[in-house]
Length: 254
Image (tube, rainbow, N blue to C red; front, side, top):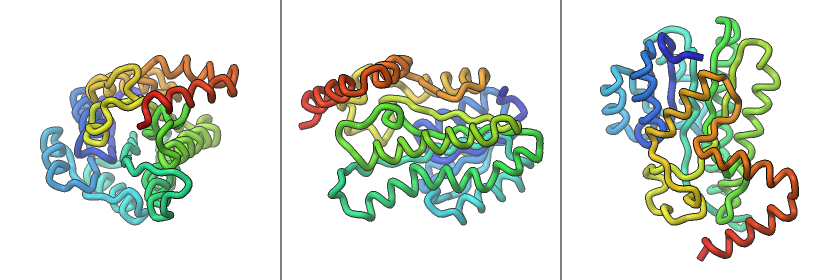
């Protein structure tokens, strides 16, 4: 899908990946860009820079997603592309309190569900559309220092798969974004973590990869191409892969 002339919504749009995508989509000639985030000040700045609309949004609340969609439609008409990009870093293990697990679940999984509920039927009725759901390489591989993150990012990938399976023959295109480390506010304290083993990518580089992959309408968006090889290793010998992940844990987790 080409971005030019399309109506785009981006959550997590106030900074990092979302901001870079808004700027790149604007450069590609998007008809309208609606950005959503909890950071109202930076959000307004991003919207102004792309001649777009800012809608303060808590993606963990379905009513907020519904309001976001309504505002975007009111401003620019039917939504062509919805980038469900918001994320957070609240790491933990099985003993981590339920509220942290629930927060991860709400932002990394249910936000995608709420977006799909709000736009998929309309997209299909209008002849098609595109969902880009941000997950992580951790959703395809794992995370050696967080069960909360790895588990919910796996669920995000699985949900995107089900959307493609159910609606792929009805005009809906679905991609899932699975980068390793990207230089954002969320990763500023983790630049030496295992996610940076293949380098830390700038958000603008990632945005280039997103646009290129959407043009080809491929499911996996892999800004770090090494991830594809890692997936293949995992599938070929799961026990060997797990052993390797334990070595990474020992090397990077203090």
